[in-house]
Every structure is written in structure tokens, then in C-alpha cells.
Length: 392
Image (cartoon, rainbow, N blue to C red; front, side, top):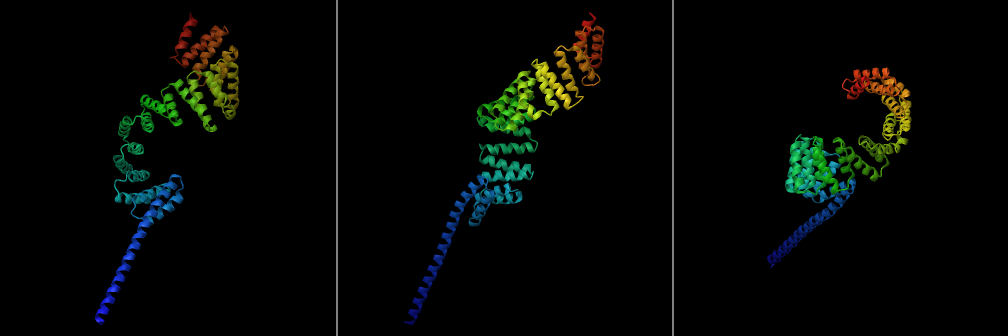
């Protein structure tokens, strides 16, 4: 009877112990499930904070995620991105590498590891990482651009352009690929092809950056009227006053080279307040005025430039040209006499002096001045023709 009682007590005790152990295990499993569920919620919050640029809050949240679920590779990738944002490149690599060991098909993990390697100037490693990301997501534009960028950094511009061209062909409406290919062509001097791609991109997207690149491509190709049209549109759309002034200056240059002097003069007139102490500004404004036939305004601009920078040869030439255009040949001859010894201006100065003397009926002075012009510039066709005409 005693034995049976002891055996029963032991059985009950064992059952209680097993029950307690099972309860502990269940409780532990429940806690793990809760921790993982909680980590997912915190991960979503951390991602949102990261997207909104709240890096400090995102870092705290993601650290809590990793504490709750250390094996989650997505959390590690986000932590790596946050570390990169704070300049902790080595630690970022550790987190990203950990994530990729757990899940090697995590394409954004490879991409951000590539970013970290590129930050460290390990361009070959960066290229390898970017390429792995691209193999996993062949149509991801950020990855295509990253691979091309790494190739350029390694000096393989041909390979980068080939990649961009191939992808641009398969994704013809992807503006960023057209722009990247155009930028690379522009840098390599293939302006014509770059312009074609910029034009296509500009048709697909109203983007001031694309338009500006197109405008500068036109300038490099000396298509001044087209460049002026582009910068005219940019000035009209610009809301930033300082930026608008920069664009207006570029528009003025384009208009001058396109011989649209009235439009150039209009641009310069809008910049008078900011540039009133700039001698070169008054020079360019005077040249535009001279182009429109406003010789009095051109003379005033030349005099303003000289007041700011006495002895400025270009300004002296502008004053002389304005005097000549206004019919004051005596004054023009005297003005150009001031720069006949300036090497860069002497040929032109003697030529205009000769024209002035001719207009004044001073044949001998005119002939001597033409000969001087030829001495300064023997290849001047105009001077040669005028000398022959004088002799006849």
C-alpha cells in the first residue's frame, strides 16, 4: 500500500513537472512569436522614418528590431543604409554582408553594399555588387545607372555606354537612361548623339535639368539660336531669383552669338542693377546696343566700362566703334589711336583708323593706316582689298 502511494506521488510530481516545462516552452515560443511580430511593426516604422529623413529615430527603431529578431536580413540592410547615411561605412558593410549571408538574393542588399564599396573607392568591388543586384533585378533603373557609374569610375566608358544604350533600347521611355547616356556621350565629345538623346528626354519629361543640359549641348555645337530658345524657356520657368540671373546671363550670350542683338540687349537691361560695377558687363551691353544700331547707348556703355576700368582696350574699341557708327570719324580715329600699340587690337585699330581717314577725305593718312593694318595682320583680306582699292 505504501509502495503504491509513493509510485502515485512520483507520477503526479512528474506530470506536474512535465506540465510546467511545457508551459515554459510554450511561453518562450509565444514570446519569440511576439518579438518577431513586434520587430516587423518596428521595421515598417523604421523604414517610414528613413524615407522621411528622420535617421536618428529610424536608427533607434531598427536597433530594437535587430534585438528582437537578429536574423532578419531586411532589418540589417536598413541598418546598413542608416550607417552609410551617418558616414559609418565600415559598420555598414558589416551589416549588409551579414544580411547577404542570410539571404544572397536580396538585391537591394547587393546594391547598398556596392554603394558602401564605392564610398570607399573600391570601384571593382562596387561594380561586382551592383552587377549582382542588376542580375537579380535586370529592369531596375537605379541598378543600371550604378553599374554604369562604377564602369566609368574604372575608366570603362565604352562598357558603360554600351550598357546604357542596350537598356535604353529596351526601355525607350525611361528618361534617366537617355540622360545618363547623353551625359556620357557629351563628355566623350559625341555632341550630335548627345543632343538627340537630350531632345528625346526633353520631349518625355519637363525637367529643367534636362533642358539645361540640352542648351549647353547646343552651345558646344554652336547652335546658338536653338540654345537661346532653350534658355529663354528656362528663364521664363525659373522661380529662384538668383538662379534666374545666371540663366539670363547665359541667354544674353546665346542671343549675342545668334546675332539677336535686341534680345541680348533686353537681357542685359534686366541685369543692370546687379552688374553696374562690372566693366565687362557694360562692354557686352554696349556691343549688343551697337548691334541694334543704338550707337549713342553703345557709346555710353563703353564710357561706363572705361570709368570702371581705365585703359580697358575692349572698351576703348567699343567707344571708337560707336563714334564711327555715329559718323564722328575724327573722334573715332583719335580713340582707336589709343590702342594701336596693343598687340591684340592693333590690326583692327589701324584698319578702322584707315576707314575714318578715308571718310574724312585724308587719302594719304588712310593709305598709311591700311599699310599699318596689313603689317599687323598680313592675312587680313579686307585690308588687302582696301589698299588695292585706294591705289586704283
